[in-house]
Image 1 (cartoon, rainbow, N blue to C red):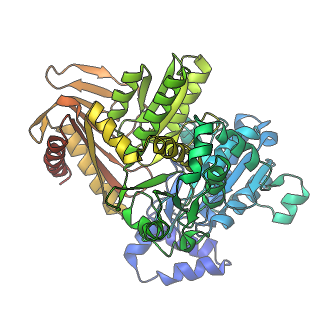
Image 2 (image 1 turned 30 degrees about the vertical axis):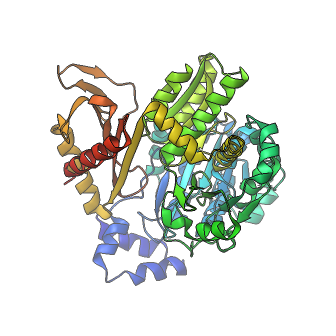
Image 3 (image 1 turned 90 degrees about the vertical axis):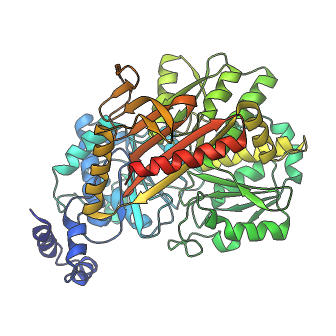
Amino acid sequence: MGYRENYQAWLEAFANDEVTMNDLRAIAADEKEIEDRFYRNLSFGTAGMRGVLGAGMNRMNIYTVRRATQGLADYLIEDNAENKERGVVIGYDSRRMSTEFALETALVLCANGIKTYLFDALRPVALLSFGVRHLNAKAGVVITASHNPPQYNGYKVYGEDGAQLGPEAASAVTEKINALTFTEAKMVTEEEAKASGLLHIIGDKEVDDDYIALVKTLSINPEVVAEAGKNLKIVYTPIHGSGNVPVRRILKEIGITNVSVVKEQENPDPNFSTVKVPNPEDPAAFTLAIKLANEVGADAIFGTDPDCDRLGVAVREKDGSFKLLTGNQIGCLMLYYILSSKQAQGNLPANGAAVKSIVSTELAHAICDAFGVAIYDTLTGFKFIGEKIQQFQDTGSHTFLFGFEESYGFLSSTFVRDKDGVNASLLIAEAAAYYSTQGKTLTDVMAEIFEKFGYYLEHVESTTLPGIDGLKVMAEIMARIRNNPPTEIGGVKVKRVLDIQRGTETEVATGEVKKLDYPESDVLYFAMEGGHFVCVRPSGTEPKIKLYVNVNDKEEAKAKELLATLTASAQELLK
C-alpha cells in the first residue's frame, strides 16, 4: 500500500485510541508529514529501532514497540521453547516514553509465556548487558535513543552474550517482525503478568551490587588511586540520564571522593532542558559543568549521555581553561594507561589484545605495537567488539584488554559486552589520579603520547538528510563514490579501497582485489599513503551520512595542515 492508504488504515485500526487518533488527525493537512510517517515501517536492523516519537509506521510508539516485541518473541520461541524460561531482561533510560515502552515490551513477552525481568528504574546500558549474562537470560531489550535529541527514542535487542544482536540474528528477528501487522501483538495486563509469575521486577540491589563489585576489579592501581584520589577534584554531569547513581558510586568506592555534580543536570529529565542535545561529544553539553568546575576549582570534568554508554572528558589546562578531549584521545589515554601499568606490574598478558572500530584512530595500533599487544579493527557498532571478546574467549587465542570507538564508547571488562560509561569513568579517573602523583594532567600525558608516536588528528562530521528524500540522496552519494572511487584525496594517493558492502579490498596501484572478512555494511574506507584514511558511511541509527578523516605526522603543525587539506577534499566527495 501507499503511504496514504497506510495512514487511512491506522485511522481505522486505532479508532479507539484517543491519543493516537489526536496525533493522526493533527497531521491530516500535512502531506509531507503523512508521507514521512507512513512511507515505510520503522526499520529494525543490527542496532534495533530508533526514531522520532509519534503515531505512524515510521515512528516510535506503543504499536511499533509491541510489533517488534512480538517478532522477538516469535524468534525466541521458534529457536527453542526453553527460551521462555530463560527469559528476557528489559532496561530503559530517562527519555520520553521509555518507562511506558519498557512495560509494553514486558507485557507482550509475558503474553507469549516468556519470563521477563524488568528493572524498577532507569539504568545504564551496561547494567542491561551485564544483567542478561548475570541472570542467564536468553536476550535483553533496552529502551533508549542514546544521545539523540529528546524527540527520539529507540529499541535495542541484545543476545545471550550481552552484546547487541549481530547481523544474522537481527535479520531473523526482522523477518519475524515483518510478518506481523501492528495489531497482532499478544498482550496481557500488568496485573495478569505479575499474577502469572512471569514478570519479575529487578530492584536496586539484585543486579547493581554485583555489577559495581566487578567494575571495581577493573582498577589497575587501587592503592595509588585510594591515596591520590582524595586530592583529585572532579565535576560530573549525567546530563539528565542514568549515570548519576552508578558513576558517583564507583568513583566514591575507589577513593575519588571530591566529586561535584551539576545540580541542574543531576535528575532525570526527558526534555534534556539544559542542553540542545544530551551528547558528551558536543562541547555545549559541558557549559554548566565548566561553570561549576571553575567555581569549585576542579581538575577535570566527566559527562555521560542519557543511557550512560558514552563518556566525555574535559581537563583543566595550565592557563585555567578546560580542554575537551576527543573520543580517540580518551580511548588512547585509557589504552596507554592499561598497557603501561600492566607492563610495569609484570602482568601484561603475552596474548593480550585490544579492539577498535575501523573509523577510530590508527594511533591505537602504534601504541599496541609498542607494547607487543595485538589489535583488531571491527565495523562501527560495539556489538562487533563484543563479538571479538566472545571469539577470544571461545578460542582462547587472546586476553581482551580494552575496546573503544571514536564516538566516546569504551570497555575494559568482559562481563559487559557494550560500551560502558561507568567502567570508563573508573578508568579515566584512575588514570588522572595516577598521573597526578607524577605532576601530570591527562593532557600532559596525551602530549607525551603524541610526541612518542606522532600526532594523530581527526575530523568527523555528519550531514543530516531526513525523510524519504534523504534516504535517496544518501544512496546516490554512496553509489556515486562506490562506482568512481578516488585515487587521491587532497593530493595524497589512495593505496587501498575497502568496499565493505561488496566485501572487497582493492589495491589501487595494481587493481588486485582481495576478499574482506567483514559483515556486509554500507561503508567505503580509503587507506592512504602515510597511514592516513578517509571513510564515508550512512549512520545506522540516524538519518545522517558520516565522514571521517584521520591523519598523522611527527610534527603537529604538519598534521594540522594535512588534516585541513584532506578534509576539504573529502567533503567534495559528498557533493
